[in-house]
Amino acid sequence: MRRQIMSMLAGLLLVTGTLLGAGPAAAAAEPPAEFGSDWHDPVTAAPPVTRPDTRSCEVTVAQAQFRDFTPYRGSYTPPTGCGDRWSKVVLRLDGNVKGRQYDRLGHLAVGGVEILRTSTPQPSPDGIAWSVAKDVTRYSELLRGAQPVEMLIGNVVDETYTGIIDVKVTLTFYAAHGATRPAAVPDRVLALNGTSLTTPRNSERIVAEVYATGSGGGCEEYWYLTVPDTAPYSCQATDGPYREVQIRVDGRLAGIAAPFPTVWTGGWSNPFLWYVIPGPRAFDIKPVQYDLTPFAALLNDGLEHRVEVSVAGVPAGRPGWSTPANVLVWQDEGSTVVTGGLTRHHESTLVNSVRHTPGPEHRLDTKGGHRLTVSGYLDTSHGRVTTTVSRAVGNVSVHRWTEDEKLDALKGTWTDDETVTTGGRATATHRRYTMDGTTTLGAGDRLRTVLTLGDTADTAEVRGGRRLAWSRLDDRYTGDATYTANVPRDQRHAVGRTAERYRLHGSEGCYDRSLTTVQGMLTQDRRRC
Image (cartoon, rainbow, N blue to C red):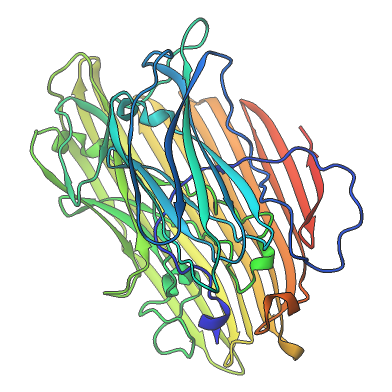
């Protein structure tokens, strides 16, 4: 029953960004009594990408209509007229689709490096348009030369699912001149070729980024709802719902992270929750980042090394996770070879406790966690630099459901705390992801989903006991939608209210925006800063 109700994504892979917000909502008539054949174009409360006031040049990277799983292939040529040391580079995806279609995932790769991963909204019969923007300045080194381009939004178009996904992707380059300096970007951007990596011998900082997504139409789309094989539920996993994205260097654990519990735009059995406001990160699939600098001395020997990404907790042989990885490298301009050593590697025992309590209402209590600390030094042209990375991840959740799964509820929290100390400067980030939702299927096949999602992060940069910079992010989504299941689209009599508030405060200023929708109409767009 759950697998039928939670049918959400039938496509595979894709990209990252920030959905461009609409302007403040004009005074409007009363919302309709129920969803009609059209609704407001998708919008999110997340802040737009800031752009410098300098000369700019635009290049079209890809333009395609996706009807199946045939990738778009083309070429990229750097712009002329804006130099090659830019203050910022902004990627923009503009899309439109109409008819009927699932949400789909996709990716954009330039020179073999994935620079965008996103999902798509589900269309109205009359059609929708949306835009996604992303700061891709960190890929500047890659973008200075001509590169092959590949993009795919896997899609299925037939007599039932008629939506053809039409997209255009551009890059806008902002010249650096006057008071605007070139951005501090990596010297090299490398795609992880399978599991093989060779870095420059004078690397002094190495960061891996992994676009980890559980998707593809199977149970790993809903990994947070899986239960042990011994419990009666439609999505089972040997060790339950605990997942952890891990990276290894030559077989040794080098980084751990909690995956973000993304809910795509058909998730939790209820597309009416997402037609206008997507859940956090659904259109902005941010990569997990790992600071691998403690391993730089080992990687700087000029030889090929094995770097592997895996997801702990996934049953052996089960598909559903995509983990493309890039490696960003900063080089020591004053040295041809940088040497050093790995001085500390301490890993706690991974804890994964699940307890199933059977009854008319089944209950699964999960508690998991893991810690890792690594430290290493490098003898650079500007002296010995020691880097220590400490990370602790955890998950606590309670899952309740009835035998027929007409009640299905989850309350979960995921934490990911990280401190990176290098050269006397420490950056601490405390991430917390939350999900609290209930789906019920009642009389007359009326399906109701009530859901709250949270994405929070506190970051502070400290040197010598003095705080240099700080930020606090709180992105919160709430939704409540009901429709009649198992009937044609025009007989669903759907109603729903959704809202998002995105708050970002810190040493660089304040941003605070709230959106509210009723039956697909945007009824509030409020800014507080």
